[in-house]
Amino acid sequence: MKRTDWPRIAAFLCLLAHASGGYAKSPEIEFEEYDLENGLHVILHRNTDAPVVSTYVLYHVGSKDERPDRTGFAHFFEHLMFEGSENIERGQIDKLISGAGGNLNASTSFDRTDYYINLPSNELELALWIESERLMHAVVDETGVETQREVVKEERRSRYDNQPYGSLMEKMAGAVFAGTPYAWTPIGSAQYIDEATIDEFRAFYKKWYVPNNAILAIAGDIDIANTKRLVEQYFGAIPKGPEPDRVAIEWDLGAEGTSQTVVEPMTPLPATVHIWRAPVLTHDDGEAMDLLITILATGKSSRMYRRLVDIERAAVNSAAFTWLQEKAGLVAAYAIGNRGITIEQLDALIEEEVRKLIDEGVSDRELQKALNQKEAEIASSLGTMSRRAQSLAYYHQWYGDASRVNTELESYLKVTKEDLKRVAKTYLTKASRNTLHYPVPER
Image (cartoon, rainbow, N blue to C red; front, side):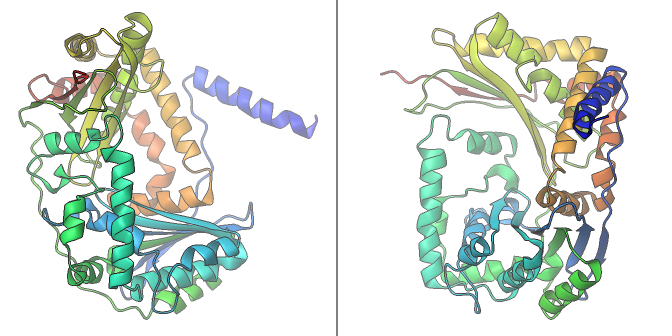
């Protein structure tokens, strides 16, 4: 048999497995994990398929950890940490990595701020040096702060303020997460960033950027013993910081819903969003909720898309998504209407599809398809060393168990049709639904 036949045979076997309801077992991701004396949690995964290495540092600080009058700090530091350190000249971090043949980036969410670097495996030490410098010696000065103030404000203007439906994330969070620190989004307020003093920025860095509030995951073509030596060399001397105090959040899943009309000059077509409070990320209903929303409105073959877009021709697009966070959660479904369609018509169609989920449940075929989609999603999420490092840190941080990287699919396979119907009936109620309406402004 020719070597080139194997990919097609593997694909065929995969299709057979799906058709019969079976699932192929992916190779386990092996790893080691340990703590340094200063509290930094380290996870190492060795894979020699390619001469590359990825480092990933997750700091357990996001927008929910900010003061209400200083929103945007976590996201601001995502930018500020690229400025430089006591031993790295301003603006050189990007150049050092690109010059070594690598790439890097960072992101901020409600619950975390993270930084990743991808490099040829022989450049691992460079990545560790940069991340240790950012953790111990980042320069938080007037020049860097003023530079990044403008960068962050421009990002907000371009991505949120000057885009159709650009306020959607903030309006959703403000409605569903009202009364909690999730009520503002990571982009934060330009006003508060402008008002903040240099001492406030330094205090934020000192509080949250400590080794005992971080996870370092390394994946790729590494020698485990040598990597441990390098980690100790670059991070071991960094002193442990005080344990950051965290805000307590009482998450009431039974809160009554609200309705809001958002009039914005750039709205091109009528739109409606239905949002419900949902369980936290690690709740037992998390997987069922994820699958339920997939069936309802994820993709062009979902119930809502077929009904609103293909059959009724009432919408140009419809979709849904979940935001299950550390201490709160929401699910949302939206539709952007065709010209001549009213928001009330869109609302009625979405409500009807949700009611069908509650009253009739889902079919075996729909559940199987959603599980197939989830299997493909999980498999693709582990296709690179960078994604593996991120996943290992993610599961350790939120589930306290990095080995969940190998068992995530199993938790979805346990979900039954009865679970989906129960979850729909429990959470997707009309009384608890929040709605956002985006009418087309009068010209």
